[in-house]
Length: 471
Image 1 (cartoon, helix red, strand yellow):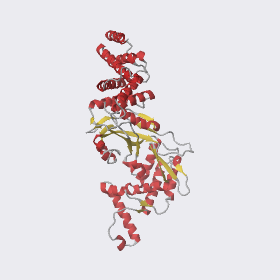
Image 2 (tube, one colour; image 1 turned 180 degrees about the vertical axis):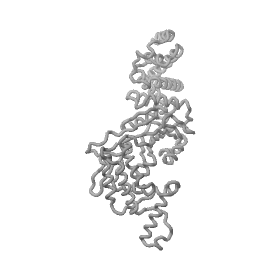
Image 3 (cartoon, helix red, strand yellow; image 1 turned 135 degrees about the vertical axis):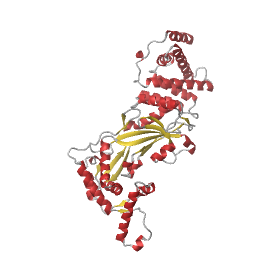
Image 4 (cartoon, one colour; image 1 turned 45 degrees about the vertical axis):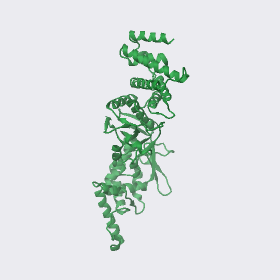
């Protein structure tokens, strides 16, 4: 998406020629040199051999990993200000919203999702000139144009890598379109992640895993505050289906992923860090782009999850839950998800069994429209029971769970034993898990008049008898 009248081909050709000229006049700061070069050659010969060695290094970098790393770490020292190349960059209509005037050199602000970075036009020219040594001036110019236009179309490609602890993923597990689970070790080499998953005890490392999704975002430039710039930045995904979120909701979106995975796996999961990595064609243009971005947050937990092997049933339940929640759960559903996930993710310490039972109770009250006790139990029976036996069992379990919740809140007859609390917690979690799987597909609050308005007669009689006994 560029302005009418902008000649892309001519712009790329002119910038390519200028970048080649800049690179030929520049001096590399890092190159393998023969010993004694300065002793046996003049300064002019030294510069010539230096540039030849640098071009050779750039050619080898295309197929030799060691040469590629050496070339990546190198820099070009420009011979004067690249006035012509900067002027050509300035002509691009998608550069203009991000230009910042300066006394010496015009600045430029870019944006990688929620992370902005700054530089000068001279810095961009230097990076693209270096790329032209390896890939040619036309390719370097085309890449910059491609980056700018992809940003304007909200289609800059990247990978979102959410790190979590609590499940052991021994082999890559495909989740659907452009998304998968993997161990941290597998993702570390593919995306150049830090040696350790997070700055926590190494004991957590064996249980560290990642959830990887393809992401597209834009814009790639950050407009000045005093200008009518580009629309709000946003990101789009293809898992579990095509959807987009504004960047204000992006961090919450990945947290929902981990919460739903925790609920699906019935396991405490801890997640603090998310990385974004851009493809090589972007990363090679500018080290600022290659770094990507990292965001960190925390979940309340007093101990590290021990970890267990992820199962196919876990994966199926997670995908189903997430398909129901996207593009982003509303406030009520989001709270229910957080509370239900919190009941798994608060093991021990100041978060005891009573706290976790109350987490489940809050989630259920949200899911069942603010109802409690027998009314909530009856709604659960209607929603989850497919026959009389299932309806009666569901009603009894829900009513019993709420009775325990009331004893905790109102201190009625003292607290139940820890074994009893543990059993009721697991029962409540399973009730919440099944309820969420049903209700996540529709909006909250639910129109309960449309959800199985009639119980099986046998179940109805059972419920009436139960109510009579409870009075």
